[in-house]
Length: 454
Ligand SMILES: Cc1cc2nc3c(=O)[nH]c(=O)nc-3n(C[C@H](O)[C@H](O)[C@H](O)COP(=O)(O)OP(=O)(O)OC[C@H]3O[C@@H](n4cnc5c(N)ncnc54)[C@H](O)[C@@H]3O)c2cc1C
Image (cartoon, rainbow, N blue to C red; front, side, top):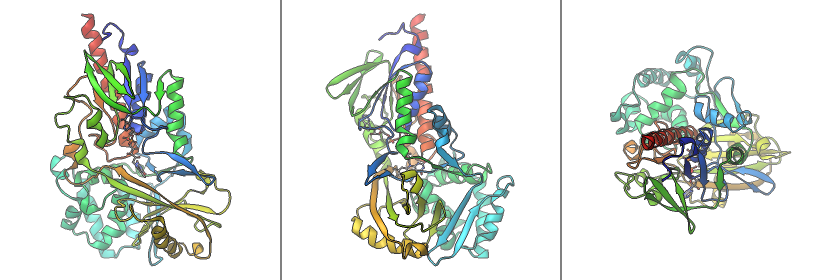
């Protein structure tokens, strides 16, 4: 162990090149560490990536951000791509239901929570009585503390039922947000995480929920520019480098990658929850079985390219239909005529194993029902992307399986959207975890240097 080196020259290995690992690596190089990033796959970006298919650049799944994603947006600025996302001036979501009725969720310029008052008053997809009940529940929700551990043991659905929320309000409002944000239905969602989401996005700051959509494919937003940033700053980025195991070695670590062993003073482990225990050094976690207990939930995206434009909305939320959210991907994917729609299906257990032909049978008629111009249009391309382990299962009790960044071994630090970030499994949670891991490593290495100097 090279204890005499100043902290800035210590070698830190980051395992995993998703958003958490990329954020950690960028923060560490900026703090002067010698960084090696090891990523198992042939590309960076982890759960956010793009690929080419029939002349289209396709994302593995539609990603959106909110204005309250402060560390994620700062990360984009750091790697020089902050201008590749378009954020709404004001939160606005057009909603349609299966009978063709329309509604709109939007904010006014009033301070929170009054900024949503007009939208709720005018939300025609709910009866007046349900709108009134929603207002009462919102006031109660606002008073809950997401850090109260008792909330995590309870489902959001049971809390909503206790507070007078009926099926129409759950379908047309609560689940519209919960399923998209937490990748699970209200009945299966941790109350603590739901309180966090609703408070942070909708009830505390008026501009927090303004929606941002990437203006470029995900690969050009995360993996490619982050890789360039790291290489430019002198970091070593190795792709196709799956770490087999990390071992303690003196005061540092040995990282075993495909027949080679790399030494490091510290290591940030930013791999998915089901992989963490197999690569972490012995003794790192008090309960090595905890991360895998988080489980996972799938997201499916159904992609349809029409020969003509079928909707003017850049995105639409849908109620009472298997379609959940529809995004216009035309410009982002490089389509020059017609329109490319991606239907994002969260909590997609029902669809994940269905063959493409069956999904086509269900979703094309449904899109034609929701967007009448799609009826006469010709669907030129239809395909499906499936992410079986899109997020961890954000169910009641899940917080007990989310470890903090600190392991039992100083110098070995965890990152990942699934760790105890206080956020759901999101891009913001991933970046926060990476930044936090880098700060911890930096502080621990500085202490080692000071310790070895006295
Ligand atoms: C389809 C889909 C839609 C989503 N939509 C949204 C959205 O709209 N908004 C939002 O905020 N979030 C969304 N998310 C969630 C978001 O993408 C994740 O929370 C975030 O990307 C997770 O980042 P991460 O770095 O924690 O994990 P990951 O991205 O999983 O990164 C882990 C990395 O570790 C690598 N790895 C694994 N094993 C090893 C090994 N042994 N050695 C080296 N490397 C290894 C993996 O290849 C991967 O690159 C979505 C996710 C999906 C899949």
